[in-house]
Length: 560
Image (cartoon, rainbow, N blue to C red; front, side, top):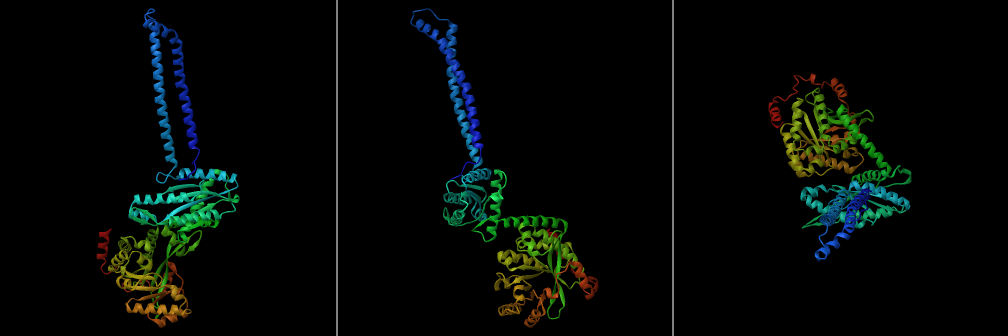
């Protein structure tokens, strides 16, 4: 697998080892040379005398000189043995340290570079490429839905998939390109190209996307994944000062582009554009603002009227979230709810808003209902029903006045879990509304088996009911179906008298929309209800708690 040297640490290591070996060799060889010279000096006189003595030609030589000669020979033999042992030990140490250095700079599974070595290598490649009049592109590769492979088949199979993909990527990249595994299912590559031939990088990256989507054989299994790739390059205009920042900035921009590739549907490549960086910066500011807003109470409930379209009687309100941002003003939920869901804060936000809404609704007449939208993410929590009921008990709000609105997509994702959750809520008196009906995946069997109390016709059908004959027929069919299933209906998006007149001719409905007024904060709702005699104080003996709240409270204590 091709990968260029990571950084200068290997060169520094080789230099240090060379200097250590040189110092060791000098001392050891110096001692050995001294011993040899001493042997030659003393042996030149003592050895001939020993030879003549052994032949009986002369008398016994000086015993001190003989012992010195023997000791000298022993020093030479010991020094040589020690030299060989230390030389072997130094060689082993060099190999061990070189192996440790390789492991520190490479990914142990794929043999590609790792994050630590990749960034310095990109810097070096950029400097070298600029010297030859070329540019460098960095790509960030993220495998789509790879977590499911680890979850369903185990990490060993996941490692086999990663290794197979790393080999495929290495074969497609040029010989002088860099390939790294950054961790998990993320890879990165860097390659140089002529500034006028950006299509060269497009072709390489496209082949990588295609290669990643090819089936992977793992034993008796055939697995499939795909890859989203973000690519970033530099021009002289946005070049940072200092080569040490090349790799870091390119990686950052490639990561932004990869995120855009995933947003556009995955299994594709995307080049970085400066507008993406601005968008990400704005998103970062939004996330920081959302966290501050949750801490400081900037998220508040607004209320939209729900009216009997035949009699214009006010029946209740739907709670809609609003963000009172000091920087952005009043922000609609379409902007911040998706971000809150991705941040994992939807439960915290929902609980805060419902607590405020229950307190507000206790000031209304007991006959007015409160409808609350629930995120599909919340319905994945098996304890969602218990949490809602605990909130009702904590704020002394009757379950019979609460309507939970869920979307068709939430039903489609986990029908079994959703059915159990909704049944638990409905058994305690909470009403369940299927929101945005007609835009999702609900089937007639789901409408028959799931515990819905009401259907809400999506505003996209209502808005064009006057100008689109197909929409008119669809709305009529939905109303007829609801009547047949004995499910009351709500029409949202009533904007004018013409739409209201058409709906009145179709059947008995509950309606809401700007025709009845814009969503209002709690104080404006009180101002609206007061002259209508629809405040809690206007009810004869208002009963804000259920007649027998004990079962609900006991059940809440049991699950809490």
